[in-house]
Length: 411
Ligand code: NAD
Ligand code: MG
Image (tube, rainbow, N blue to C red; front, side, top):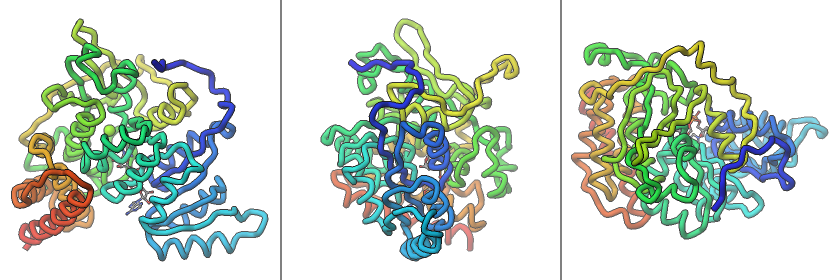
């Protein structure tokens, strides 16, 4: 049995070699911030991004990775150009790759032992899976990958012996509250329920009427967490909690009836585990993703994450309430998709991505996001999720149907 030790932050004798998928994003930058604090402990092997070449060029200059990958080929050309234009003394010996093939190549590269999976959305599935199949320590932030392909993804983890560590703050909290050898055997651990906390998002107190007219800027202004745009909107609709419920079912081998969502607006308790003897274990901390990231990077040791200590005296109180399924139907839609099984969660995820994008671009009202998802789920026949090809085909089909729904709603 491995046990969690509260070790000093002294550098491990052999540094971990790290690839960060989605390095320019909110999670990617927080990961590199933790890495920066422990120069002897981590070596950055590869960094990837979607299309922001300038931002990745700056990171390449600082971390001097062997590889950099831009998903977009034009952005890869720009990155090559930016690096080549640097004075020789500052120019890193970084090879630039592009496209999904490049992302999967660095994710599976034997030279790295640890992969932070922090691409947003379905685009992260193939590279994350490549890291899993290569048996890496995979730090999973990209919850959409697991939601889409749950059983196949977890089967791949078991088959390769990959070490999957949850980075989503709630799942990392649950992981910390479980005995390490019983993470996927909750009855054996004496666990009765998981209490999944949710901030409630920026519109927790909005009426159904007010929700109709909220803007993308308001939806992205989360009260406690600073995050990418897509997950910010997901937090505002509560779809984030729906995706997280599915994520928890796969990670901890449980079912939605064993998970209860608690809206906790302060975001100090990151989730809890209830045991048969009446004990409830919680993980608390300032709402800062560097804590779960540092936990995953150093596990089973503990390292400084640069996070402000929790001050319970200034916090004073914590509050808890039940989620309102009427105003926020996404939670119910996610539970329904999980219970339906097969390709339904992949359809839910794809419809949500399309609807959120349309909302962010001002083409769809906030209150219509769940409508698009519900209609897409109703119109997309479910298949058994027996192979990845079927999942990708259903993802594409759901995107087409969701776009049709959006057109119908907005004419
Ligand atoms: P973000 O939008 O800030 O960053 C996304 C990253 O993915 C960027 O580096 C971007 O360049 C890259 N990317 C985007 N599209 C891509 C594509 N098609 N191909 C390759 N790369 C692409 O997102 P984020 O907030 O950092 O979230 C990343 C993931 O982590 C999401 O799955 C999110 O649900 C999860 N997560 C985030 C937080 C948070 O606090 N931000 C917390 C928990 C979980
Ligand atoms: Mg979360």
